[in-house]
Image (tube, rainbow over all chains, first blue to last red):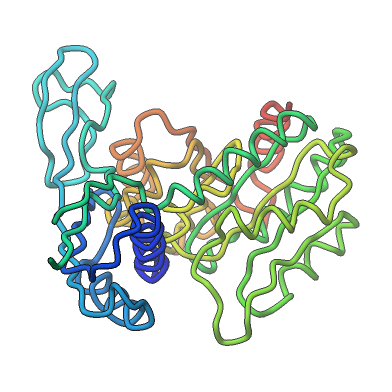
Length: 116
Length: 218
């Protein structure tokens, strides 16, 4: 369900940037980055975006491209870096739990491609 | 033509949340956001912990975020403390509380004369984890009836919380759940989380939880 609001926020940000750039061209693609920590279901986000874009002139024919980022952690004790596919947040080299998440928390509009 | 943007989709919410934390610091109250699945016992926990906190002299209030009904707000109001019910549309209730609804709810209170405000979030282990409410501390309540695997299925929730409270331990003799496995799964997701267990129904460990919360108050 949070995809609905995230889609709405994507549209707000894109409209805001279009207004700032004073560009009147239509948007071809919105490039969105979602880290896997954020539990975004791409199909649901896509659907929410497609429903809401229709009432926005420069966005109504646009596509949403969603790039998912794997979760990567870095051990603060031994500096070892690894990507994880299961929710096990410890270093697999030295087993320390003193880790930081370096990738996977992303949730941002990266760029937009405009029609010429 | 490509336009580079790089803007976080939750930036507007995060800015509001930071402003709430700034206000709480200035006025000297602590804000605790309580999240869980529906039925884990958020309201029951508040019902049992609030009288203990009142005995310790803590002046508190509760923001209720339940969808459409005021049932929870009515349960808390009996404890004779201020309650602000967040209004959601009938049948169109949201799945989480964003910072934008916390601000008007807080404005209903005499904040200068409060030490602690609880937010009882909407029962849901996914969406509330995404949206910063502006709370100083995030708690997750998980009950013994939910199974050991829930932390693994909802890792973001257990990562964003400082404290996890396992509720309904009075039911352990009747359930197949292995509580040590549940604790291990929580710690695996967030090794730094404060982990406590209680029964809001029987009152077991409630004084300890009240003391823990008391120590968090500014």
